[in-house]
Image 1 (cartoon, each protein chain N blue to C red):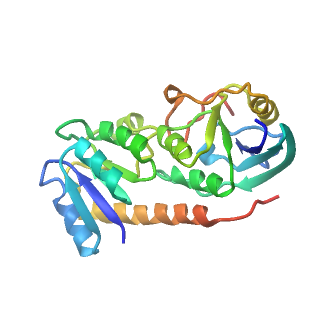
Image 2: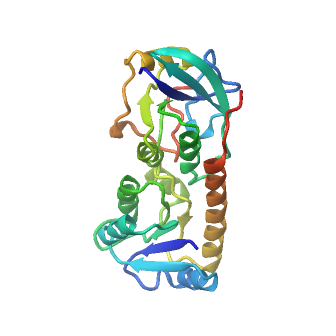
Length: 132
Length: 134
């Protein structure tokens, strides 16, 4: 990834040294990583919005409005995945590593896979998978 | 003005729902089959789709799965005789608003519309929020 904004659902205060939330719809904050010429230029966070059953499009709209290009999830449901695709946000998948930094580095260097349709999970916004 | 699409072949299923929608001056369309509904959501914007448990060409949940691939932005709710736990399991990832009982009554329609209003408000709030927090 040369340029763009990455979003990572995060626990607590978030940030590059923070940990990922396994349930993106219920995460505390989204950590934003702005990338320019393949390097991290800025890190910021955005408070997540209220999450209700059926409110899958809330984070989709939220991240689209904040010009996010790529999202890294541990798990996600079919409806929000389709929503992200519709608004042009690429969704990447890593269900193993809890730390934000390593998965962001892998995405930037092209090592993180785009999520497949058969990797979707439940919960109307992603379930817990193996992340904390 | 929101538009609602009712999907199902049994006229009795939607009697009370249609009555409440009419009372609230909410416009609704009706289609019997899942494929017919998929065609309609491609051509028209609906705020809510309500599907019966069984359609002539597929189940309601099969229709809901197909619908999210066509237009994930549309809110959907399904009539189902499953237990709450089984329904949750069967509909995981679909982001359905709620489960409606077989032959939903006016109180269920009122609750659904109130819930839809809440979801639309949250969605609109998130859609207009600007600026990052440091």
